[in-house]
Amino acid sequence: MLNLFSLLEVSGVNVTPNQTKLHFASNQGSDPLLAFYSGKFKTWQEEQTRKNFERPYVISLIQLPERGTWLFSGLYRVNGVTEGTHVPWIYSTELVEGQENLVGRVVLRFQKDFRNSYVFGEKYASGLVVIELRRERAAISEFPGYKDVLLTKAELDVIVSQNLESWRAALSSVSGIYLIVDQSTGKQYVGSAYGEGGIWTRWCQYYLTRHGGNEELVALLRNAGSEHANNFQFAVLEVCDLAFTKDQVIGRESHWKNVLCSKEHGLNRN
Image (cartoon, rainbow, N blue to C red):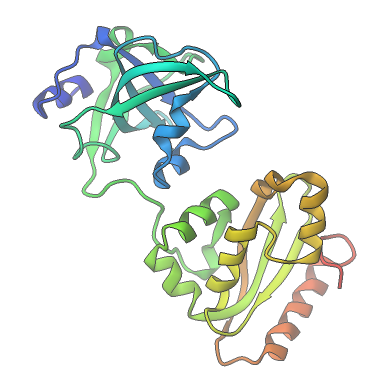
C-alpha cells in the first residue's frame, strides 16, 4: 500500500514526517470541503485560534463523507504567523511546488481515533494510506436531477459563484416552486421563479443578497443577523415549463403554501 509521504517523494516533493504537522480538517462550525471547492481553503486554514502550525510544513487533509477517508488538500510551507484581529493568529503559508497534480485528487484512508486536529507528522505518517487517485480534482457534484436537489446556503454560494454548468443549465431551463427551510427552527418559506433564467436567476439573488428580496426573509435576517442565512436549505418542490405564465406559476406556489401551511406556521406572510 502506497503511503502519502512516498507518493510525495515520487512526485519530487521531498519532505520528511518530522518536518510536518498534519492538519485533519473536519466540519466543526465551518466546512473545509466547501472552502476547498470555492478556492478559499488556504485562507480558511491560515486563521487559527492557537499556534497550531509550529513546524516548517503543514499537510492538510479534509474529512470526506465516507468514514475514515480524507482528501489531500496540499502540502503548505509555513512562512510565519502574526496576531489577528477577528481570530487570535493568522499564518502565512504557500503551497509547495511539485504537487499540483495531487491536490484535491488523492484520497487517503486513515482511522482517526483521537480528537486533536493538529498532530506531529512522524507519529501518524505510516497510517496515511493512499486508496485513490482521482482523475479530476474534487468539486461540487454535477446536477443530480430536480427531485434530488438539496443544498445548504454555502453549497448554493459555491455553485453560483463558480457558475457550474450542469446546475446553471438545468435550473435556468425551468420555472418552478422552491422551498427554503430555516434549519435552526424548521420554519419553511415557499417561493416561486418564473420568466427568463427561471430558478437559476432567482437563486442567484439569494447568493447576492442572502434574502432574495423577500420581505419575510429580510425581516428575519434583520433581527437574527445576516449570517443566519447560513441556516437556509434549498430544494425544488415543482418544476414548470418556462412558457408558464406568471399567474400559472404563482397559482402553483399558492398550492404548495397551503400544503405546507407555510403562511400559518412558516415564513410566508401571504
